[in-house]
Amino acid sequence: MPIPTHHTPLTPAVLHILLALSAQERHGYGIMKQVEEDSQGKVKMGPGTLYGSIGRMIDAGLIRESDKKIDPEMDDERRVYYVITAVGKKALAAELQRYDDVVTLAKTKTILTFTPAYGF
Amino acid sequence: MASDRTPSRYRKLYAALLRFYPKPYRTRYAEGMEQTFSDLSREHAEAGERLLPFALWAFTDTFIGILRENVSSLFSILTMHAKNILRPALGSALLLLIPLIAMQYTREVNWTGSDFAFMGILLFGTGLAYELIIARSRNTLYRWAVAIGILTAFLLVWVNAAVGIIGDGPVNLLYFAVIAVGGLGAIISRFQPRGLAITLFAAALTQLLVPVIALILWAPPAIDWSPGVLPVFMLNACFAAMFAGAGWLFWHAARA
Image (cartoon, rainbow over all chains, first blue to last red; front, top):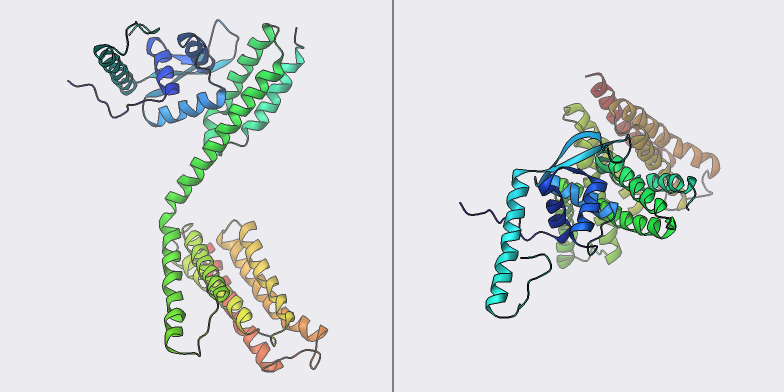
C-alpha cells in the first residue's frame, strides 16, 4: 500500500516534533530537548514556535494530547503529554521516504559523495 | 548563581505576555507554555547562566507566535463572516449605481467623489451592522426590531447630512447624541433584547430632547428653523416613534 503523501513536505519544526514523539510520548519541554538533541543543536524552538506547531499538528491530526501526568525526572507538576497518531506516523514515514529518495537521486548524479550526518 | 527569585519574576512576566494570545488558544496551551518556559529558565539558572538573554529570546519567539495566532484568528473570523460582509458590500455597490447612472442622463443629480464615499460607507456600515446583529438571534421580532432601529438611524444620519433637520446649521450636530446613545447602549447591553429595548427607548427620548434643547438655546430667529418649528418637531416625533417602535419589538422579543 503506497504511503500517503498528502501531508508532505513538512516544515523542519513539524518533522522534528514528529521524530521526537516517534519513540515515546513527551511533554513540551521534553519535545524541545529531544529536538535539540536530535538536530545536534541546529534546531532550537522557543515555546511560541513549539506550541504554535503543536496546535497546527493537533488540528491536522498528526499528534494528540495524552494524559496529564507527573514527570518523575523533573518535579511534582502535572504536565500535558503529546503522542503521535497513526496519521502522524504515516506523514513522518512519507517525509523520511521523500528525503531518502532525494539523497538516492543525489548519489546517482554523484552530487552527494559522502554519507550525510543523519545517516540516510 | 542566578537568584531564586529571578526565574519566578520572568515567569510572571511570561504569564502576562501569554494573555495576548486569542482566548481559545490561551485556554488550550497557556499552561503548557508557562510550564515549558519555567522548565527552560530553571535549566538556564541551574547552569549558572544569565536569564535575561534567554528571556529576551523566549519572549521574542512567543511575541511572534502571538502575532501569528491573532492574524490567523482574525482571518478565521473574516472567513466565517464572509457572507455577512459580502452581502452589504454588494448591496451598497448596487445602490450607488443608481446615482451614478442618473448622473449620465440628468444634471439634477450631481454627486462628488466624497458624496459617493460618504454614502458608500454609510450604506455598507448600516448593512454590516444589520448582518452582524441579526446573526445573534433567530427570533423574528428581534430581527424586525434590528431592521427598524438600524433603518431609522440610517435615515437620521442621511437626512441630517444631506439637508439638516433644524435648518442646515451646526445645531444638527446635536443628533450625534442619538446615535451615540444607540451605539453605546447596544454595546453595553451586549445586543441582548431587553437591553436593546431600553436603549431604543432612550434613543427615542434623546431624539425628542434635541429640538427642545435647540429651541431653548437657539430659538428663532437666532438660527434658521426651516421648514418651521412645528414641522421640525413633527419630523423628530416620527424618528422617535420609529425608535420607540423598535424598542417595543425588542421588549416583546425579550419576553418571548
